[in-house]
Image (cartoon, rainbow, N blue to C red; front, side, top):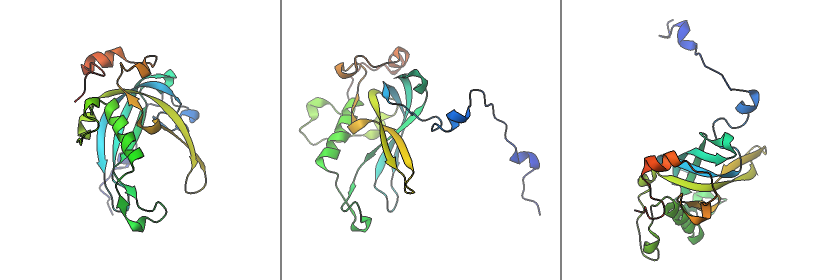
Length: 193
């Protein structure tokens, strides 16, 4: 019986220059070190699935970082648009996010230039799709935990949505990419939507 494939359809060739056993075990092309740097939002992906919280995933490429071996690696950041009424019993449904979670979202949006600080204190709408192509600076911290099998895990994340425009005083000493800043046309903190 024919499968429609030739034997050579099951052969792939790869250039493994620079690949080591350690690099395969390090999380692949994902940011895997604490540090400070600049990221570019490559994509913004809404996520909604039965039994899961609605969220938005931001696919970000590291373009300047200390330590430098993290440059060109990816980082995924999620913001959640709802919370479980009972975190241990998801059958109870969802509820709006807390004020603390809302403030994390607003810090993230402000750092991306999606929220004008002058508009805080009012009812606002954030168009997260406008984040695509934007630059931001942040620190990355290691968060340790355990998976469902009890194995230790390490995730590298943006703490509490703290991202900043490249010219913000909070990130004055962070590594940055002058080339990306020039290409983006971003003026920094004054370049808000």
